Image 1 (cartoon, rainbow, N blue to C red):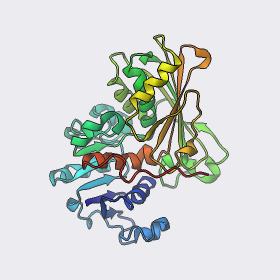
Image 2: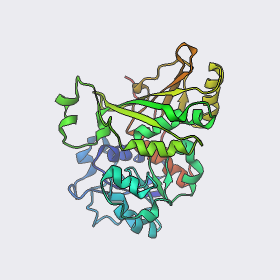
Image 3: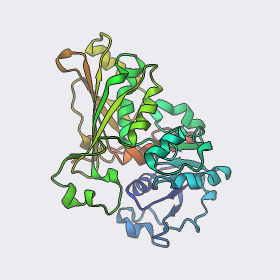
Image 4: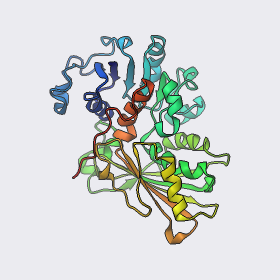
Length: 345
């Protein structure tokens, strides 16, 4: 059994990890940390886990994470970089759900996250945890940077087109929407029910932290200079993410060949569903599952291709993706513990 520790088990991604790992056939939950909730039974905070998780929260000082095989960090930015070096020296694998290791350039990270990176020597060592595009590196890794939720949709949507050299990499536009759980489990005015309900707004238009992460990853897929306009929006739902991706075709290709391009690319990816051409994937078709669904459109058969991408921002966009990486790191089938069907209605 894989002995698992979770740092930061009281947030949305933390409880989602608990939900998934509690029924994982190869996992033994060993430690869950929270300084504020030290000693509190996990099931008292999250009644959905009664009878499934019998652990109590432990303060970081009292949790011996070095006895774990892998530790997930479901924490604010900056926490993993402070603790990862010691864990890695002890032979513990680390999966960080925050952004500490997603951006390879120290100066770029510090510009966007406004904190000093305290272990830049680990940046090159970290594997980027988007399994569909980076399986081999993840399998060999001891440290994984779990991708951001928006970047997951953008990369999987643009990748086949960039790889095939079919689009203008300098004019990518991503119009993306997320449910309020993406902002985390915290008391903040913008995510209060009376503020977010019956409302729709954009944010981060002048620049968002996921832009440099996404651009850097997309740049790996093309020799042309990537230019990405990314605009996120907050929608009044708890879970769900919908990204509408626009790209300008630079080569002549039929709709049938476009569709085949995506189907061939993801035919061995259990968690990417390429829907029929012209489909309209819905966020609720992925709710509670690790599935990402996408569909292609081409208005008036012109030179614009539109990729619609949906996922659950807490599962494929965060905790499910992290478990997917853990499976690869420990030589398990990638789908182990992640075959839940989406909730409907």
